[in-house]
Length: 285
Image 1 (cartoon, rainbow, N blue to C red):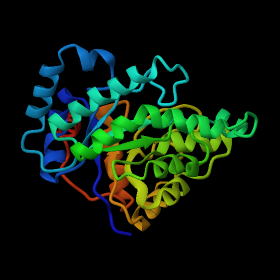
Image 2 (cartoon, rainbow, N blue to C red; image 1 turned 120 degrees about the vertical axis):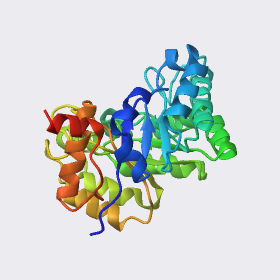
Image 3 (cartoon, rainbow, N blue to C red; image 1 turned 135 degrees about the vertical axis):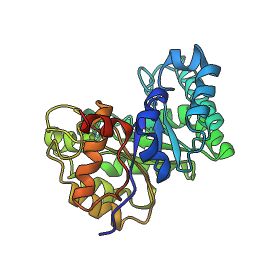
């Protein structure tokens, strides 16, 4: 199995701690500074400028995590839907201005949806119509800017449901994201397929992966190797995929990035590289 190049999710100030590791190998970076209302409305220009400065000299791929709190992309309130679209368009502007070519958004599908899909007339069709109303202008803007929206599994039980949503747009500006920890939680809590099967189902639509480990109980965002995910199976599925997704460690504790990367490297799954400044300073103490 060929080792894969992985990067990390970081905020602007955190990039410097891992700069050598990220920049020397051109690793994927996902910036997580544009996820909130305040980030998109207060100090926006300064935040964009800071991101461009922090990324100067980086030759890898860049994405951002889009806003999501309170912004359900299938919101039933007709008055709120245009506000959600506007918020996502503002985040897409940020992505474009800093040179990011992906924006992560959250899936609207849950275990409740999956269990009740036949309980209400036209439930699936109405939900999909609301998603198209909200995301349609954002997908078109992504097409114009060359930015892909990647829809991340949150509480999804059936990966093919989210894949069908992406396919329904018929656009190269929307694709799939997989969060390994969320998939594992869905497996434990709701009988979802194994994480590797999420990857296999995504196929050529897979454009982005959050790498994080869990214990099967909560959304831990631990370093790979600290939880129960079957990493060899996941990376075997990634290696078999025809796509080339952004692969980024999304850890609560950014100081664990070297440890998580090292665990994957030691399994022969990740391409090796230099330690970050943080890892070097920690090992010298």
